[in-house]
Image (tube, rainbow, N blue to C red; front, side):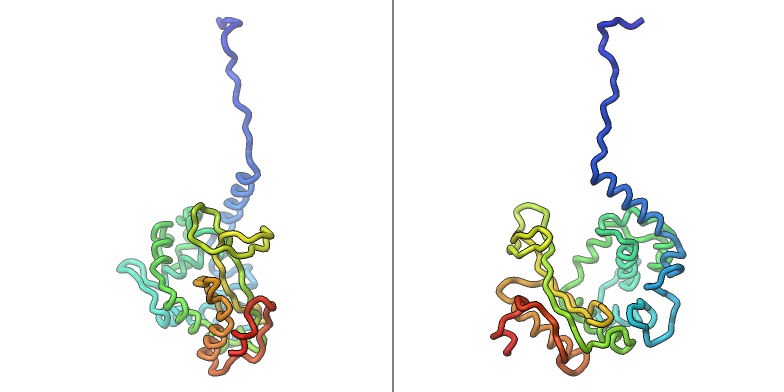
Amino acid sequence: MTSISAPTCRRAATFVSPCSLIRSRYIRTARSRVSVSYFLGAGMTSFSWFNQESPLDPGQFNLLALDLPALVTAAGYPGTRDIPAINYLLGLLAVKLTGTRRVSHVHDLAADPGAALFAGLTALPKTTALTTYSYRLQHAKQKKFLTALDKASVAAGLAPGEVLNLDFHAVMHWGEDAALEKHYVPSRSQRTRSVLTFFAEDADSHALLYANADLVKATQNNEVRGFAEHWKTVTGTHPALLVMDSKVTTKPSSAN
């Protein structure tokens, strides 16, 4: 028997935050995509692993035509005894192809056989391995990779390079006590501590041709000139036409 004065056992109300619902839906979407057919390009119009026809049609992503192993070799990316550089890169690419926002979320598909097959491994490297590898890639190696990638893209017809779009993009920092400069973040409509990045894309195919996240306010006006020299290294000539916002550079810098 239970006394009427005994406390009633009640179940606490369950509150599901919108963030939890979004994350749950995001995980389900990611898991529904991870299959062998997804990574091999079945049913995908923008990615084809086995299509070896060259040159490429604009917008088509063909790793074989771009010769990804040669790009990795040209960049000098490091590997380990167990995982070569090309497999590390394919592991990181697999995370991006599934729409995973952060490398730390790789555990959602780490055991998927399709992702492992795509990367040429028995299983994708875990969070620590992928993030540690990313930190090992110096800026100089990234520049070599971009140079080799742009040469392959132009040769394959992926990037005509007649008109190039340039712009900055500020990536907001969400932590505390960041040793970062303040830049204008459009999504927040305010200046806040963020990482300033610079991008260049082909205006016709929208292929990304250049990116740099190692920028500070003191030198950001020179980034357009830096890209022009990069493009000359790739094609042998300076860009014919650059499209940019008036604040991307200054007149003194562009005159040089």
